[in-house]
Image (tube, rainbow, N blue to C red):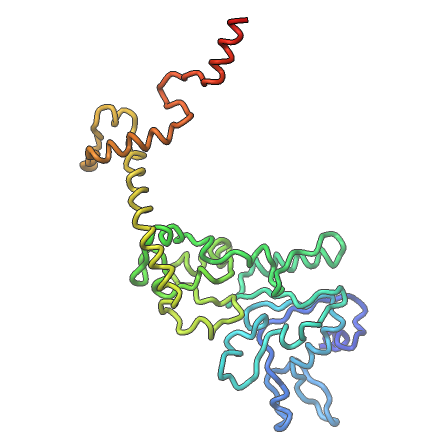
Length: 325
């Protein structure tokens, strides 16, 4: 514990970074009973060795720290221990140290949320900060809440592998379904997190990737603002209805295009798909007519494969002018 005590006294003799995990309980609530919520080592009080409250240790160390980093939702925003009705008065580091706090390098508290936090998010941010502190790299970009902007700007929904189902208006009805999970309790469209893109461990897993709805664990409002868990968010009344309406048309238009994308030139010429795996239904007259106009738009101002190129009107006019000269 000696390095901790030297650091809190400003006598460590070298720069250090505080990395704090877990929410900070309000030790003032124990003033009357003489107890404590969380301790880190001991200190002498009235001649007796007593537990050193972690909150006090942090408060004394932070003015001398080159940077203070909160890892995990409990340390960043308070998390579950700070939920409504808790008896500990728990809070995150920003609440505890205050908005005016600055490290010796002028940095406010750096927040890396997650319950649990994604490991690569932590190591990547720490590495970037250490490079800045050593003067060999720029200060990384953080958002207004002190989160690494390059990691926590996009929503879960933006990078979700199930996002295409939402766009087409198809939703899971029960756990295990492959479609979008919004209607069975996923808050992904409003949660800033990169778990789908980065994965849980070694780029593998991640909540929605393995079929679990997002419950907003990286957000300051977690858990209260996302309760009750695994129930349809109120916003889906509007968003899902709109998605289902527009998605119906988008889905059918894409299936129409897919039908022709699944046919080779020869099959179109022979009007038959020679597959031994099953019968492939031929396009109806209406579908053929629709595809005719679709292809007209597709190859507008372009040369259809297999067709001779027609000289552009402007180029043709220029050629005629040269001949006349």
